Image (cartoon, rainbow, N blue to C red; front, side, top):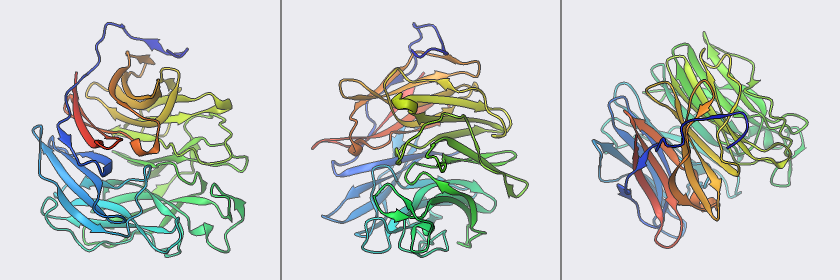
Length: 395
């Protein structure tokens, strides 16, 4: 275990992971989970239905049982990516909101965000809306959404400055271009769009974003990108209607002249916020957790949570007792999804195995959602018999 963390009693068994309770076909992947306020979990994922054709599906877990999948939309214009996956959430009035990415031009990196809503638990869906006003054939993705106002608040990475006329820099795909940015807007239940707000005009190009709701506003986290190519995790907050200037959660000083495709994760309860992230300064990979008692205004010192060879792909959930459960990929003879409980005082309990996996991109980003004291995990198994799997861990 890493120096600087107090290891809890090694006899602590952690959680027990049950057998898979949901299995999607082999040509499936990119699962994502959302826990509702009444003990249900809603999941989205993709299934391939043809050479270039996919279906975005949704299912709900109630009392440990999963509903039959329902198709949100099917077609051949999806931008399907191992790291940039769709999501779903439920609004207080019961409306479901989902997002996906759709190709906007023949270029590989030309795609836009689409958002649709359902008032009947996924049986039917509205015509999609695009949250960003920009229509340039550039990248728009890595969306994070939360219920907000009379609808949904969301952030995304926006590549409009990468179009002709942007400030030339050397991007990750080897082409001169402007910088990626992170932006925010809101979508009402009627599909109306709020203001399109620039939060940061220079960010990592393809790391996931994270967004959390607190009693004092919103907290957004993402991987920043300095002029010197330092890739710290930054946080900005929506307070009294205004977004604060971005600040780093910690000064990792990770110099990396490219995008590591490894974004942060947030979890909140009231004004308590927990964040998990991956970093690798001087080629020393690490996974960290930090806590905030004041809606993201200040953060604890980073608590190292990996077992020595992390690959990142983190997720985090606050637990009922105020501690946090963090998951990540750890390099072994292949790779494993591991998890452990972390406490505010820096104590970390013994890590435990969620499932064996692979370092390959096809294994994607495992996701989790808390339901009472249980935690539901979703991941993608690779291989001819693989696909989306879901299992529940019980304390």
